[in-house]
Length: 151
Image (tube, rainbow, N blue to C red):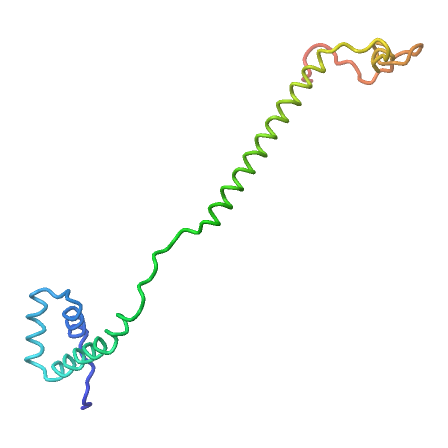
């Protein structure tokens, strides 16, 4: 037999629960029964508790010497940069909106104006039909017969 047999999973769970302070009275009673019945379980329990005590003794002073971690702070630069970007984006959108409104208003105003008498428009120079003066208008499209288009 080996001097340190592998402990049962139940024993490991019970010892860990007692060490963490999470054991119920039933768990503590079961652990006490296992420790009375099995000498290997007592050896495992003593090894575990002595190791935990040594670690706590060794590193208790180290934890006290370490400075407390600083609370996290929000990065001020990123907030300012994001705010500046939003201001520029809103300004650009407002300028685009003003431009669209101005161009639509300009187009409506231009369509209400009458053509100047000095410079005739293209359609006035070519006549109503679009043909040059003195020429017959060319037919571009064939007429659609009246009636149903279904054969």
